[in-house]
Amino acid sequence: MRAHRCTCGAAEHRRVAVHRNRRRRAAGLAFRALRQLRVLGTGREGDPLMEAGLWHVLGVGCGNLPRMLRRSLRTIKKAIAAGTMRAAPLRRMEAESLLRLRDYRAAFEAFTKVARFASEEDLHVAPFRLRHDVLLLERLVAAGRISAAVGHPAAQQLHQALTSLGEECMQGQLWVARVTDLPIEVQESLRSALYDRLECVCPTPRQELLWEDKDPLNSEIDWDALEEDFLDNGLIVVDEFFCAEALQELWRYSMEGTCFRSLRPGYLGAFPWDGCVHPLLRCAAERLEERLPRILHRRPLARWWLFKYLDPGSSGIGVHADEAAVNFNIWLTPTSACRRGGGMEIYRSVPGQGTWTADFNSVRSDAGQEEVCRAAMKSGGVDYVAYRQNRACVFVSDRFHASEPFEFPDVENPRVNLTLLFGDRHEVQRTRRSSSSFFVRRSGASASPGAQASDLRIS
Image (cartoon, rainbow, N blue to C red):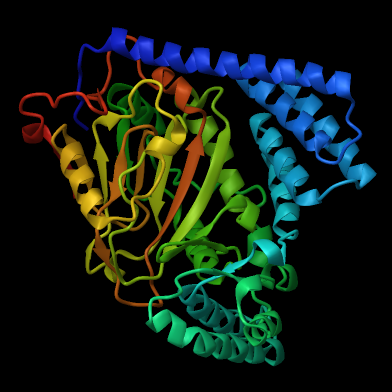
């Protein structure tokens, strides 16, 4: 790996100070709001969730202070026992607080309960999701996880719904729609097809339970050397990241998992609240904290997801940065399925001081704007990482990055990536040694002379 050094320590410290002050202000506001709740009482519906959320914000603002996070959990349990409001928001808040406390096993169990509370009023549908679910039902029947008497009729109902939506989709009038806004006959077809309910009716396969306490990481990797490289450069690329058995299980999960429920433009996401809670993912996070203690110290697992791209030729995810300290991005699809592209561009730019998350973690719908943004980012230097199965890109998470446009023509082998995010963006300074820093510039700053010449390419 090549180290990209610059003398930007003072600017970095100012940026960190801005985020620290913002967190302190948020914690102060949360504390005043909590005092006001004590004055008004918490009898109205919604107040328990608000109070739990405020205790959560206070705990996070104080560096994941256990006392306040546990106060949030006690408030949630009291509200759940009382049964005075919807359980899904409470369970999700419970899971988020448990993650901050590093009680990953309990957090995964809480997210499992969240996934079962999906409301039809919040449910959306898109043609590519229906086509995906038809293939999914066929795989589940073939794997014996659902009977043919249930799976085949459900697939037929999805075909019927897709046919009913076909004319509107062809005319460009429908990309995604709320289920309750569709014609009644389409809604009935979706209900008969178990749309978005497979998570509840499909039993967990035995092979998932075998990963409750197994180490999924490659034991032959020199993790100490990788940690040194990361602390110097802020970016490392790790091949053969998972052991062969774990990679095989993750690919099976990507093809048979019922948790791909979040709709995105041309692809599906499987988030924790969708039921993406395979114990292998929990074990991976726990083992990474053991193997990379200096990188992940006091930076708990914050969120994770699987993305499955259903458009064979896609531009992938556009330029963005993530609200976290460290990003692990691992590709799962066999390399042979990639006809072109599919890698990642990691820019040597980060969001400016005081930038809100919505300003750097959003997707541009206009292709022209996206191209302009990519060109501007490249002028400041970029690290190109080529696609390869079981390759992990590990980098400081607030660096802008984007997918390389790709082509995966086989519908049975779509591009799938796993992302694990650790820690908070405001602590990103602690991922670098005080004596050095990888090459980085703030968004909007002028490009350094000759930056393009030092672009790093990893094939």
